Length: 358
Picture (cartoon, helix red, strand yellow):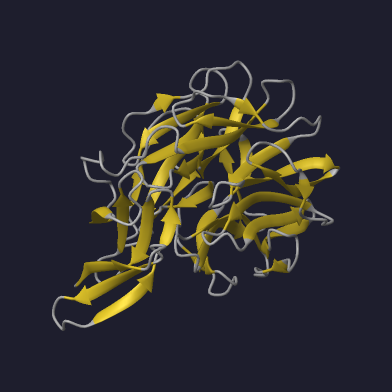
């Protein structure tokens, strides 16, 4: 078992660990998430480091990540204005991108276009948002600054492009692309629009809705055999499962085998589980699958539609969509499914939440 030993470097980009048995030390990189920093340590899963306000050079707290999270998260939670939630809403007549505080306050509209803008995702540094839009007839990916300015088209593909997800280091965006008669596959692209690559091509399979592991080395996605369907509350849908891949698309591995539609995965910040939508109970719930033992836990347990789950960067909260009040609203819950609370309250549909670290 290795133990946390010391921090190095004025920019706090490195951590030094010391093996308790051998006494040997080594230096590892850590990844910034606001005031929280993640570092993989062999034998201790992933450590999260926390710093006091204005004291970035002084370690305040360090814990090994756990799920469900520790009961006392007071030191680990950020102030309400440090995380925001971006989502799409039809409240102004068509689907646009909005930003709000994690308590539902401070609503700001970011896009103004008659097309359908949806499925936004924030860059790791919180400066930009990538989203899907059909403003070019087919759905393409676009970038905007966090204040809604500088709209830039990112992809120029023949088929629809959906479900963008930014890599933890900010260097790539993963997404799915395909047409009605063409299998959907996973792609990556640089944020400047260069170096687009198709990374999956498993014969007879569809893959959609990619999400990155916290270390950026793997992807998870929904996928399944073309033409294999199941009846759901929405009608007939693909019998899709959750898969994992290396970041280059190699080593495709089916993670779940549930007699249901399973989709929109989100990898936990601790790296130990993946949450996803599933119709296993006959309706859509948010489930969690452990990457340690494969066990599956139902987090929402609600006989209505629950979908589009997204982790907060510190792993303490999950945002999701539910239609418990007759239309889709954004909800938030603890990582273990507790304290489910509605954030939005509008007669129009709100959907596709994602977190932003500002």
